[in-house]
Image 1 (cartoon, rainbow, N blue to C red):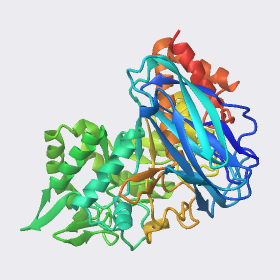
Image 2: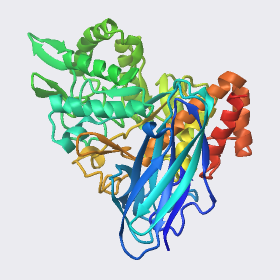
Image 3: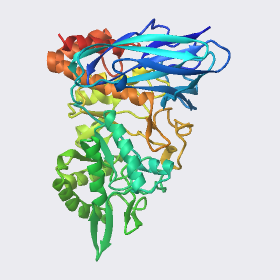
Image 4: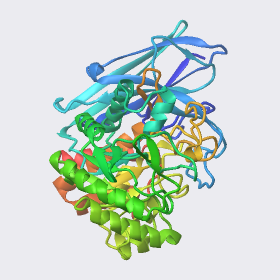
Length: 540
């Protein structure tokens, strides 16, 4: 048997043990895109020979200079999830395609196993509309195979992104993996590469550590110091140095971010303690400091007048939000309410926002700007919450979208259309590069454990892998989420041209019923068909 090729949409995950990837798709030989978007398709390949073969790939296209090719690598996970529905690739641990690796001039094809190449086309905004062909050729010493894909570029252009997106970047994970000191020249070089990767994928808001973020930290333990605000104390008065914060913000703006969220000023899951804060080179606040203690309130009261003045001077006041405490629960309501109210007075006019899913926190004005879990969006929408932000993390594990390794690509990409359906203003996730164990007890090798050593569903802690040269290595899931936010932009364009009721009716017709966070098409080709319909409507 000679080489086998199969063209597939970007949403299909080609599993190594399959007899044939996506057998329900006879052929995906054509797609459509708006000008200015990033479009991707896949070439799955397999060899029936009984030995490893060296192969070469090339393609011919008038869009060759705008097209990159990467191969899908495999990653092992010991935990797929704790709960399951039927809309998964598989439940068992094992190898899943995820990292997108550079394609060498010559690479190996393993016998009787499918793999895939991902062709990513950066469609120029000024490209003339029309059909553009891609002739894909895969060859070995003994055989060769070809496949042709046709991309229809529409006359309409993808509009700017109107929804905010935040993926929490963990500086200490970069420091641990690359063995860098915080704010060294090399650290800043690497950080800028990750900044640019985020903004290229639709991230607009950057988690900014005034002080070491009190996130996923075991009680009594601490994460490596990541502090942008220099603090000293002389004659009983605090003094603040915003030099590093200024450099951070300017670098972020240059890389394409348009807003900042300052990391939490009270500990996670309860707001009971102050975060780690270094003053004059030593830890001054932390787990031993009650969040509402006179000493910590004195510190915050001293911090905010010069911080607010700095933000105003730099023109950042309207581009910032502050966090109090991440994911407070009902039992934490009293202390969270006290601390959040205190913080609101200090940071005004900048708002305070936090991830939580207790609707009463919003109804009772405990949190004025909540970020609710994605399965709670309908309830918060019904309560009149605007602007409406959403998040997901290690759950929900059933019914809704998420970014887990064992989810079909279409389920992950569905996020963009769902955020549009509920007119969400933003989306947040905690793990862009959390290459650490649960509660940050030690660093892990993300190439070997994408589940924090079996404690989070595989794929939840991060979207990128660390490259050898300091550059991030994208994942299939990261690319799918970029496509999700492009879907949102395409639906926004449709709403601008035909009206929002028309766009919402199209979603319901496409799905064949009410489209929601828990009811949506499951087929891998569904979103491709949705985009084709949108493109037809916006070019009428």
